[in-house]
Image (cartoon, rainbow, N blue to C red; front, side):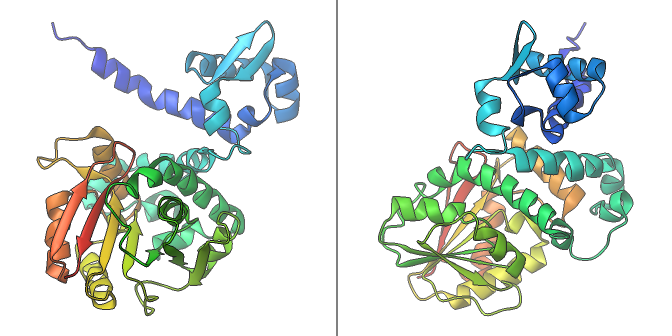
Length: 327
């Protein structure tokens, strides 16, 4: 008889995610250490139900319980507490409020080959407008992207030697985590973020004096001058036709010897893994018009746009890197 362990684990997997999502969204990790009665009073929830959730978080390794007191474990304190500089809380709450409902309609996405915004939320139009519908929603989304970016950007900027470039402009660079990591690594490099006006307003709360903030739309506006552009978690959002147009625009804007740094999760050449990239590709099906790709697929689009040299690097983090050069 085959071992049913993998099936049983997957049946249970969404329960573990939702337990963490719910505890984080309620604010549990911002209020510990505390007793059950203290937390129930502060959160205004049923004590018996809360005890079950807290004990589940103990089992998940997110909380400890000594006598009557619950406290964060080290990993929860670093990544699930809002005030932590390394917090992933924004991405956790975004996953709970947006991605979890979208994934509930995965079957429809597979049948029709399109995102599920209308089916799930009754929303049409450019998808990213929904992330910016209120200042609070925008802040939450970018907080999540910032936490993920801090995990990968230091290794991304070390994947290739970027010391020969003068100015890096991150197109759609959000909170500036990539350019700040680049400025740390290459002190002589000038850095800037070019993003939509609402994103630039939010970025002001994340960047330091080294980062120039420039408002604009990389699809419709002229690109700021630079000899190195970056696209981090951008290309996987869009269809191939839009990607090709954007890459051609970037290539035309670069001087001879310039380059483009693409930051995405890379699928294995046979598309059999890695599992996080495969899951992310399904995620893009649910919430965008894009998908994850192999290095070869990105290389084909980059060379079509005119780039001569294309190199890929697996960083060992949640994002990988591609450097495409213009001769």
